[in-house]
Length: 277
Image (tube, rainbow, N blue to C red):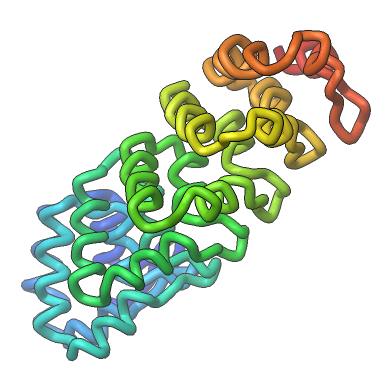
């Protein structure tokens, strides 16, 4: 009965984490599941996406929930088993840092998780996780932008700056995902607060020493052959549209130059504004 799965194939314990219900989480963990099962048994239970207890805690858990559960896991698992458990991916090839990127601005929890991984598995594994691609060809950094998590994005970017050189970071930022979008396309389309787009653009400008290469990067086309500005219009993202138009594209091009840029259907700035503006 305890392992019966509900919506999204979550058992009761996973539901308590997903709903960030700390009181029921502690009760179910200590006084129910630990009474009937070993921690190894229920920690490895997965949902429809192949996500286990640790994936859920990375995505939804508070610092106190993470501390509590990770200490229990550390006491139950051998060092080797714990390391193997930490690096498990879900069915979409997302590691724990991909899941953590979906945290709603909870930088403290993500920082705690990264420190735990570094202590238990090593800094090289953290770097590997930061650079791994999911089945959607997205790194954790891309996920933080796509899900509008500014604090987590800034935290991840600080790790990139500490552990990778400029050329590697530029390659990460230019990499296109399953839909053909790079990280600037994601920010243009999905960042509901312009701060994410502003921070990303500040970092991109710092990384590009050659301004002609920077201009080429700006005109890179993503899904449906849209550049970042067209993506912001297509997704009716006003905040990023105004920022990209005035402070980015107008800085490097004349309006005539970028206004004529078109997508796969031959639709330019004005066509997109007519449809979605």
